Each structure stands twice: as C-alpha cells, then as structure tokens.
Amino acid sequence: MSEVYRTFTSESVTQGHPDKVADIISDAILDAYMAGDKNSHVACETCVTTDFCMVFGEITSNTDLSEDDIEKIIRDTIIEIGYDKPELEFDGNTCKVSNRLHAQSQDINQGVDRGDDESGAGDQGMMFGFATNETESLMPYPIDLARKLTNKLTELRESGEIPYLRPDGKAQVSVNYDKDGNVVSLDAVVLSTQHDETVSDDQEKLKEDIREKLFKAVIPEGLMTEDTKEHINPTGKFEIGGPHGDAGLTGRKIIVDTYGGYARHGGGAFSGKDCTKVDRSACYMARYIAKNIVASGLAEKCEIQLSYAIGVAEPTSVMVDTFGTGAEGLDFDKIVRENFKLTPDGIIETLGLRDTTYKQTAKYGHFGIEGLPWERTDKAEDLKKYIEN
Image 1 (cartoon, one colour):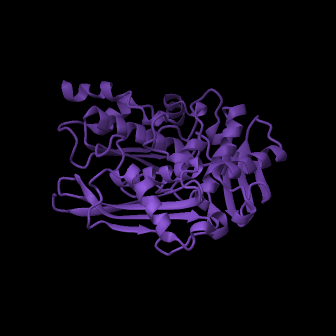
Image 2 (cartoon, rainbow, N blue to C red):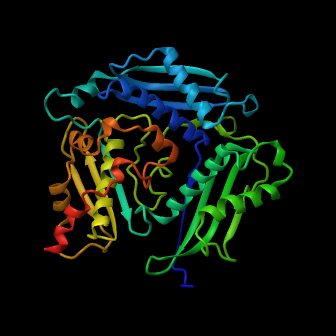
Image 3 (cartoon, rainbow, N blue to C red):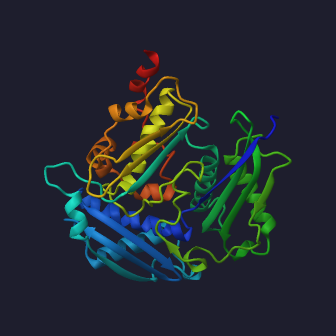
C-alpha cells in the first residue's frame, strides 16, 4: 500500500437531519410555485424545532397558493421525510405550522426583471464550482463517499431493511491520499444514526447491521483496513433526534450541499431560492463548466469562480484554477467566456432551470447526482478542440 501523504475529511447528513428538513421544505414550496408559474421569484426560508415549523421569506408569483396549500405542502413533506409519529416529538400530522411568507421587495425586483432586456443578477456575491477526476461523478472522493453512505442509510430505513432506524443521521469519512493524489484507504469512518427504543440497550446489534448492510454495500472492498478507525453511534443511544433534538434552519449545510470542504465556497445557500438567484444558479453553472473542462481532458481538476453585482447581467469576474493540472498554453478564462453563457438568463436557458425540480437536490445532493442538468458533460467534446489543435 502506498504511503499516506495527506488525509481529508468530509461529512454528509440524511434527509431527517433538522437542517436538511428545513432545506427540503423550502425547496418543496419553491417547486410548488414554479410548477404554476415558471417565472416565480421565491426566497423561502424554513426553521424547525420541537413540533413546530415556520416558513418565512419573499414570494412574487402568479401561482395562487393559499395558506392551506402551503400548510399541506409543509405537512406532506415532513411526513414524506419520515417524521410521522407523535413519539418523535416532530410529527407532520400534528405539529404547529406558521406561515410568514410575503411579497418580494420592489427595490430588488426592479434590477432583476427588465422586460425584454437581459435580466440582472438577483444579488451580489461570488460563487464556486469544482470538479476532479478522482471519482466517476467527477466529485471529490470524501464527499462522494459520505453522501453515498447517508443516501444508502435513508434507503435502508425507508425500505424497512433496518426497521428500527429513524430519519436523522450523519456520515463522516477521512480519506487517505498518497503524494500523487490517489486514494489509499480510509483513515476513519463515523456513522451516527437515530433509532427507536428497541436497540437502545443493544448497540452491538445496530453496529453489526450498519457494518453488514451499509458499510459493505457502499464502501469499496479494501478501503477499510485494520488501521481504519470506526465509530458507529459513538455516544451510545441516539433516540432523540431531528428537530426535537436540535433546531433546524435552511442553508446551514452549505458545505454538505457542495464539495465537503474540498473546494472553496462563496457563502451562499441554495434551497428555497428560485433560479434568478445567482447564489444558486451560478454555483450550478460553475459546476457545469468545471465538470465539462475535466471531462474533456483539458484538466484533471478545475475550480471556477464567478462573481456578480445585483441588477447587473454580466459577471464582474471569471476565475479558472486547474491547480497545475491544465493543458499547457491554454487561456482558460477565454475558453470559459467563449463557450458558456454566464448571464442569469444565459445560465437559466443553458441548464433549463425553470423546468428543474429542486426538492430532489435538497434530499440527495446538489452535485454528483446523475440526471441533474448541471451534471451533463455535453460540452466536453466541443472543448477537446483546444487540445487537439
């Protein structure tokens, strides 16, 4: 086995984590408005705690959703996630729901909606996208593996294969790399999962089920060695979880939602925001650009930064970093500007963002998930011309 040069750690959380509950509810409301009016402007935040959910923010839409409609979306989403029993102290059937959504500021809207002119950015800020060839999904290995663990954990709960699981959970992996950037082994794997009272005094059964039905199904053979540190529910029983265990708020899992800390982050969150908000759409575009550059062979790693001013269509800056892995002699900034539309309207058109369902991204991950439009590599063949000529 190669000598370990560095170790990098990323985490992921399940749908039942309180912050993810908030994200999913915000995106469910966004989807409902977009379904009736593709030009809806939505900025919906959610907070959850013991038997309580509040949504708040700004909406401008021709979709007519009543108070009852909003409440039904919230309750249905909470139940769908798995919080559907009184003993969880957060039950979609009975929890209190408060709606504080209102109309969007016209001061902001005047810079975004310009009739037939190019739409301006919905906010200022900087956004990053990243891709690397160390996984098939062109995602960093640590976040790719951590997310596979949490998604499989949810699958084991929903299918009933591990019947005592409850919705809340986390996975964290520490990945060892050699000096050439190759994955060598797992330094540590941490898995915490909420469960019912039937295994509270039998944590060994839970640990064995996690090893056999989760780790063996997801972690590639040979990656866990005798030196790998394993922590399954390290504090012991984990009955109390979800919004009853900790309050949840939209946008607090921005690192989980992106690259697990492996690449930089501009600070903006995604869920509950429509596609005119460059916090979301420009991050998707930056990922699309970075992934196509790597898929084309122009670079082994690529990070894109875009920045915008509120009400201005063209980005204020474009930065491309290939970390020394890019083909020699290429002007990557020029390549990006020549091949990708970077205005808010151009991004929306290229990625079909008015026709995208967003709740799935809050559930399963915004990047590295097949089927999402910004995960396409349809520009890779065109980009190859820069290294073939």
